[in-house]
Length: 288
Image (cartoon, rainbow, N blue to C red):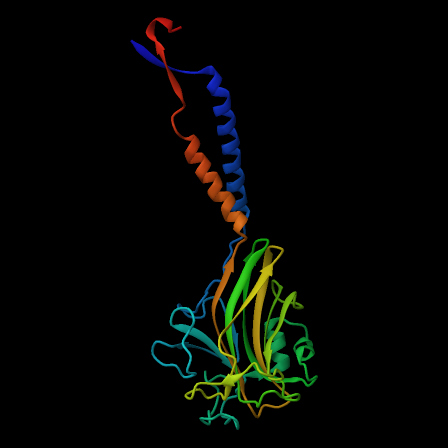
């Protein structure tokens, strides 16, 4: 008759692997629990504005129903629209003679936009490549948290009724990341302005804008994790006779791949060492 008994020589390697694996899993769990909640709370506006705070002429368009700007959302059905239009004003440059703000809410003065976004006074004007001030605009922002080396991405389309390129009426679309609650831009800046040559093409025929860039993707790395604010704005520069605007969609915030890999590795090894220990057959008469 044969019985099964663990080999003493096999216990030590197994014990070592099991101990090391449990340590790896514990480390992965600790890293996971230490991570701040990471996400832009609404990534593609399918459930409304979510945690985004909006300022001025900002609205959501359901492109499955209508495409007022001739462009579909890049993720899902909805994208965000913002413009520099004040209410009850006909844009001189609008092909369709757009009268009033798209959302029904006025764009706000440049200084008021800075204050609402939490950007220091004068910082939007400093972005202007022509040196002329921002007259009015719209924007939106959100508080969020990120881990080290997270990748942020979003898609944008800048639209204008200025004749590009122009060295004077340099309307622009900008974005930035500040400390939580606001402050100077830690990263970001102008995404596009009307001073650029060869960046614009004709907007779709139904659009109230004459030119646009088309949707483009912006990627940025957040090197140091923490709590931040992300801000966006579009502004008229020098005058408000010709409107500019933007479409934005598909916000993503992805943690560094090594973080996820550490967690998955720990889970795999734990499953591997969870198997029954190796045993060897021993004759009954040799039992201790």
